[in-house]
Length: 303
Image (tube, rainbow, N blue to C red):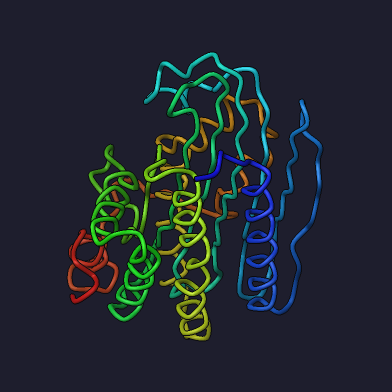
């Protein structure tokens, strides 16, 4: 069993970032990600990648960050208070895709690794996952998404997909509205089971399964016809996405607390969103079905 190695994690995450950027650029076909490389304090590195105004992708951000700090921010140490105040390194990739077509779901993915000096036996851990936020529900898409998520974890134990799925359903939930954000996927945190090599392999498998989970859905739906009604509903639901990121998401709080470049921290927000006072979809419509049925957590493997 090898010791934790942040350099190998960095190499993997930057390679994954490059792969995802290439696939999304090819899928859009009309524009490219802006590419920056920004040295961080203490030897860290930020590699922002942001695409805006594409034909198929209205906005996407695929961010890699390696941070070096004197003390973990509260958002990262609140579940492990004994690690607070200790020097650390953190590496992460975080991405968001806001498609233009309302029939294509928004998606988010994240992988992160923390290495804390002087933290004892649990001085390192992985976290992350991916989730899907549809505006219109398609059972075939949800089934494919969750079957691919399950496949990512099968080499590591039969208990992990149900666990990570439940954690995803619980985390991506707007408690102030009593609404799920989407149909979930995978979410894990503070993970160091079975040592560094096995934990790293699990995190990498989650990362490697993101594109196979999302791109078939993207390609299947991006050519569907839509009108003003569908676009209006997409923008309304994007408001929920913004609410979650700003009011609930630990990753956003961590980025702000750690002093990271705010443009990178908030790059996940949608380019356009709307809010309407006390609006409800008309009963019997596809918009109502999303609320009344499709977003409710369930077994999507065999729905």
